[in-house]
Length: 561
Image (cartoon, rainbow, N blue to C red):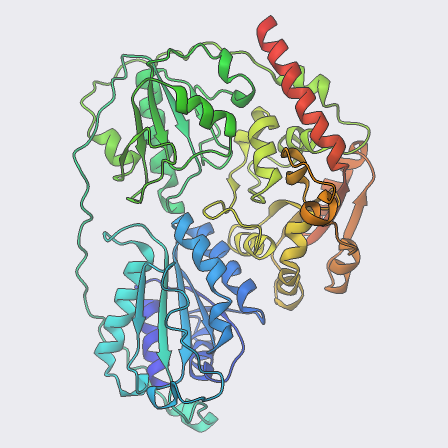
């Protein structure tokens, strides 16, 4: 326990403020040490019984503030359950500390209970793997534990080393594992001074340049930097847009400011009518937005494409058309040899919002395009949102109107999985305050253990869950899948009552019968200041047809405008 306390105190000195604790015996020293630090107000402690859900909760919390959150698990399959969240943290470039308790060497490879090769489980997804002394962390001196903590924290945060991401510290604990109350009271903090660690600068190539005097377009993909850096990123983008007058095609996850100039609404519906020269310069920010139409457009575009990432040097252009620079937009703008000029107007574009409002009225049966259009307007301004990485994030991109810019939108599309959806939203809400999650029925059911976080927490996060229940995997309804077994092989509808399941966890909910009732239901949900569920049932087959009809009509509308 003294070793565990020293390690956790060293992490707290580095910046650790929150820890999610899962149950276990081998991790007992870490649990007791975390409890001591929580009692001293050095650490905020959250408990969760499901390691998979716990890791996603921690990832949501880390994303909200841009600071690593630790997850403590016991040994064995508990560690394997961390892999989905580690994969998402890796691809989303968000910091995560995975502290896994293990058996010492004497119990390895001899059939000892709950002893597996957990050192290898997370390697492919982690920025760095660190291990305590194999004979037990109690054999390590304080300075060695301090150095381990420093290295782990800096690797997770990407402190001058590379992009942020997940880090695993595998910590062998020898028995006896559990200190008596008297022994705990006798322990004195022994963290001491924290060792320094070198911070090598990542190697970044020469700064590529674009000419703001020539035609160009900014394509803002999902934001993959840390939350504290968002404001500087927004200011840098504004500076370039004011210099160039270039239009912006933004993904809803791009983290743009609400007053971002030159933003084109419903751009995905009018790509072929934007009057962009074939040789225009393209400034691409971050990974690709969730649009097949944009991919096709980029593939045939003849002009130069520059892709700027926020410290992530891994290839992020599946089209292989862009030059990539990983120094970040702020550094790129600072090094452009341009003079400040008066703001240039953006090229005029068609405003499809009035037309869409007539096509998607706020009455009648619930449909998904209408929800994407109206929810940004009906939800309180600046309320953050999380969009499930399936139909919601795509519908928001296509049908969401000008009000989309009033909300910071999150989604976890690094690996585009639906696992962990509810737990991620719980983590975001725990640190950001009131938040709305827009999700489908399969994504919510896949992470139903996330509801445990609503009933077990002393202060449940204020999360409004908007469940679009279309009776299965609605996104597959939009694909050209020809099979007689579509329902059982792809849609996979489930016979679970989501309102009853939420109620079993003490979460109140309501059914929204039609779009006419949506505004009143939102007001009720937001007034609860705790996790609540609104269920909105739609017909996925009818919605798929509606999307196609709207796209065809939008082309005619753009031609007439």
